[in-house]
Length: 455
Image 1 (tube, one colour):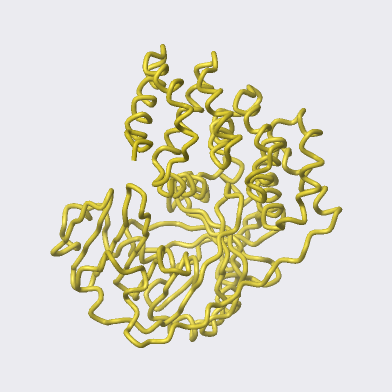
Image 2: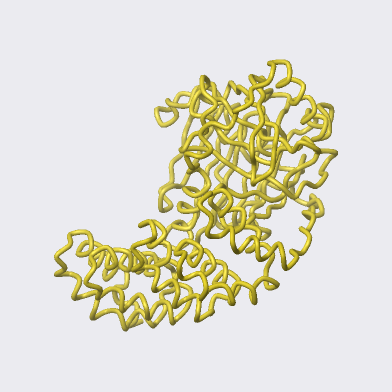
């Protein structure tokens, strides 16, 4: 289900491990922070180019079904089309210049704001909306309206490599907030940006907001990262960015069209810019693949996540190596889980990986979240769903919970596979389960299935 994936993806992006709490082990003189910031601004393309940016279109899906569009300094539009799922389309439109606002969330509940600057729904936001901040910081670093103040500099490790860390203070978008910007030591471009817990500490928050960055391409004279990933994401997300796109000036003072897409702000007749292309990473060598597979079972969480992303991004070339390594990884549950996850991303019908995930749902060596994720991973093919049906009858209450939560996700989708019909006897039996959670979820799943198989 799309919204579940979004929420889970969002949770994965923002939850930072304790190992990253303090990365400034080697503090440097205050002037060094300013010096590094100036190097980063120059590497991005210089202030002259940055200060010419008037709007940013962040197109997450080429068909326009998921788009962020910001007109600086005070207008924001989000369009996320989740149809035909139950959650419909999510739209948020805020104009801090005129005060007009509109949103549909959750489940297509529509609300019009006469003045968002004074409305109680926005009382916790002092100044401009934080949505206006993110593209300026994560894509540009600095603009005419958003100028971070360098606070401190230190050395840090990012994805196993040494990097320069600059902590900055940003004001004007809610409460003053401290961010950590990690710069490549050679290019001085940001490789990671993360929010700190508060302005007085360099400890990274476990609430919001964390992003690794790469795939820099020049757009309008500015180096823009076209690929990003959260700390625990297994893949790099690619996006299309437009700078200073032609848009309809009246767009932010009227109700958006639910039947259009996220590009409805575009001026009629305007020609979209050619989509920029992120540089492709070099193919991995056999030695690199072997090392990354070993890293999938490392005790260092960041090392595991780097290996997970790099192997997934490498594609089909790593399939033979992963297939060979899966049986031998049985003594390392974390490594076995990560190998199975990658195999199913690259080959969703892979029977060996599916069987491994089914075993891992019951593996007490894994953390509960990994066991739950193993259950979710079984939703991708018929063999996996059949395994989940069997797990519904487990003697272990936690295994039954993992399985029923997976069925909850499956039955919230717009299209439920016919195979779910085979799970009905087991689901009905769980209505009388000893565990309250299992009983409640079984009732919800059966209600979501409803009479679909009769139609």
